[in-house]
Length: 623
Image 1 (tube, rainbow, N blue to C red):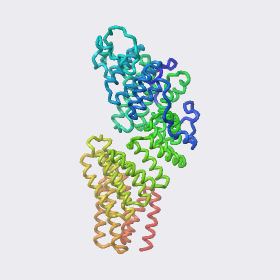
Image 2 (cartoon, rainbow, N blue to C red):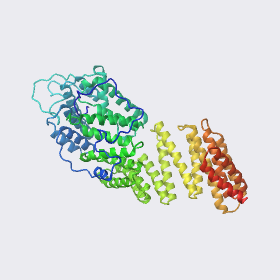
Image 3 (cartoon, rainbow, N blue to C red):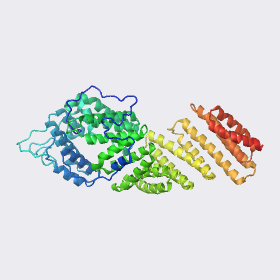
Image 4 (cartoon, helix red, strand yellow):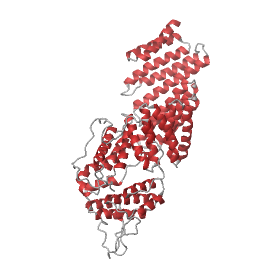
């Protein structure tokens, strides 16, 4: 319910939180919150960051350390160890904010174990301590937010909800008959609105990335965290501890997932700057964990704009996690590091990090958690020109994802597998992988529980992947496969056009592409059958029919697609010239080639124009 630390008397409170500038300037490595950060990271930095964790970890020495370890153990399902640790530190002396953290962690661990009654008892003890420390408004808001006011008030002789029977409750002398709990009947009208907003921001953590929140859910989470941060200056004196860093980090998590990386960078750097000022001055501030979280967020937020800097932040976070027993977040962060290094063009460093990532997968006992890491290492192998190794890794990832019926993971795996198989010279298998990917995308798009945003996203992926099948099949001479897939795209477009979620211009674009694909497949199949002979009547009629159908669809361009219409008209003439030439119809091919050349020149497409110039010259010479 509160972040570690006590209220900061030095901090100036303002009426509003600071807003991120329109464009965040990349700060130099000498910034006070990035001591010793080298950009880009060196191999020595990577060796230090990617060492195996120092297990078993030493026993915690502080109450705050015990609270963190309890949460880590609970995350891994090691519930008995978490219970034992909470009991061992139940009576250790500690600042109030750390004591609250221990109770909160113990309650979360009990709830994860299914011991809801024990969890509620511990939460009531926690609220009692907050109230006893003089933060009545905070205690009332916590009671309301946690739903504890619905429980019966303690009786006269039952010892109360905060009795010492709680495994983490400190023993206290008997004081005779107790009064009824003054917080038992709290209603929303009794709670300060600003305090309640802050407590709501603290009590419900942001769901993990694997939860796949849609845009509306992310918008609600952003509103919750923004409301808490806006309310905090007004409620600061009524809140135990200083939750500002935690609120900012949670807001940054949401902003990254919404694609607003500049704002996320601003929030994470604000936290690092504040923690740098407090370090060494306030012993109860959880500098290390909050700082690690901030560096982790920066590693993800900066990956597109400054990948080398993002990799350096990931290294800092990983070094800080050497003494933390959280294998899954650690592996996820190493995946981010590998991708950041690749984006930065650091091939040697990327290969080293990928090898270490593969060797560290044994720290994940649950095979389901290994899928992302296997994909990341496979992508590195493909980029390094070693597709056969990637294919084996992706086969393992696919077995795991298929057992879990994880269609999102299967979609990503099959698309990557297709690329590896294509590079390995196995086009038929690559086409099969792309078709599996299209099937997964279709399943996700047609799922009854899919949001409109999901349907839009996965329909777009499905149509794109099926277009890739047509192109790849044409490239390797599988003309029947190409023609069948193009027809399948047209059938799918007809089916989804009744309840469209994609723009009409996008659906039209895919229809034109499929129509031209049909023409190319038929012409190439005819050319292969004729084996250099001039096209017969059947081939010429089939070509004319498919070409006219493509022209009809192009002419029916929807509003807003006029620019694409011009492109497709020129492209069709270009492809028709190529096909007519293959069919032995030289004069007709020359007419189409000249039309295409004029079109490319008018559009300023010099590369296409140069290619068609050669075709025109060859056809004129042959004529």
